[in-house]
Image 1 (tube, helix red, strand yellow):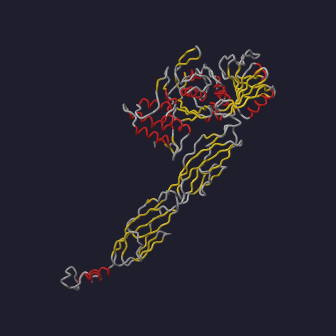
Image 2: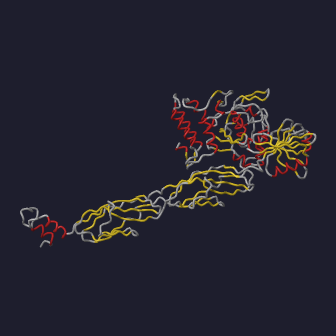
Image 3: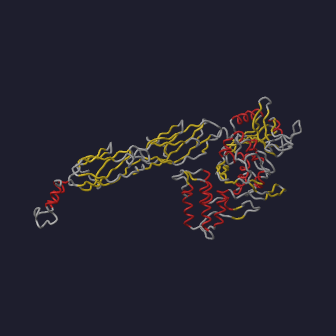
Length: 615
């Protein structure tokens, strides 16, 4: 798990390696209760002391704690087989397949595709394409191909045109050929992991010069493993589940998570409007709206970057013989031409060699009403809150050291509205005095005092429409790292009765935080220096007059940084005795006098040799 954390952030590649290594270690054995308990502990603490994206939190919890999609494993085979939630006693194969489903993107949709009475097979391979082309997501990336999911792909084209940042933010590039994809169901974000392999190399279904739309299509198919989220009733991890038609309102909801949606049905007496919540329950109803009333509303929706989809009930052709409207088909309404008074439509069939349809065209709202068509609108532009796209990592301030970090890029607004930021503690109180937040630059800064303790910060982004989103992260406070002893002072020598003067080098200690150091000196046992020896803390200089009696003195020098952390070194100062001191020593060793038999080691020659030179 330590290896899965990089700079305080849990990575997808790290979690994938954790699980693949675990499966490998099981061999023919089974997951123990202790191992399963450890996995649950990791899942429960992914954002404690470290930071994890909403995507990884979701998929790892689904892997460890269970999910409806765990009932089966498909893996690109024609049919699915039973899998089951993880539990103590699981075999390596189950651990590997659950890891593949949630972290490696290897639970590919079924190779067998059934659309009505048509059946065919696909094989998966990876085209060499970028996630997004240089211009980012575009509605022109939608070219439907041979799959009946116009309701979803027309929504993809519309959102890419109206709210491209919503498309960009729905993908997490794990950097290893896998991608996390966010989709919504009833306003709640769900995540799946896909790899870069596409059906028939990306040539049979949606096809473009980049991957995103094809990966969205594949992710939408994989999402059906845990239920039917298309407006149709077919479920299962299969292109069949999304390729037999569906409701565009489900496609819009899957991409935007809108909390309010609208449907308008053309009738002989006008337009009937329905307002729906994220669960597709009707919350309001209005009958017999005029063309002018609805047109004004659609123009306002398009201006606000809401997404608008047409469900056509009729076929039509332009003056060149190209088909425009297609019965039983969903198309994007991407604009309004003020010069012609017509709505601008794009067919998700896109562009193809020798095409017999118009990719884009214009049509009147009255034509659509007379045909009994349906128009679907989400609230992605006018009422979509800012989105957290980059979770701020847990931070650490060292006491006494100036520290700063930025939250730039943490949030985006799907509709491009300006964001303002506020920061408080988790309990709603103001940040501590030592932690400042610059709302203009997104920079946190400060110097934690020695008495400071960690805080949990709630950062809130608010757009100009008043909608908000928040993230929470920890700011820990750590004791400063002590100064390091980098150049040990050598033992020193002095002569009794002589002046003593030496200094410890400036590089004896260094501070990891670059803080200024102050110095003090004592004897090795911590007691004060002997009276004859002084220490100048400013110059790190020892000075004094050595005692004539000599001896060895253990000295201790302590360096302390501005945060109060300290370190020390010890060394010896050896003072050799002076000549007079040696005489006194010899005399004291002969209690009977110079010529006493009790002092055979003392004689006059020895004493005289100490007192005067030899003549």
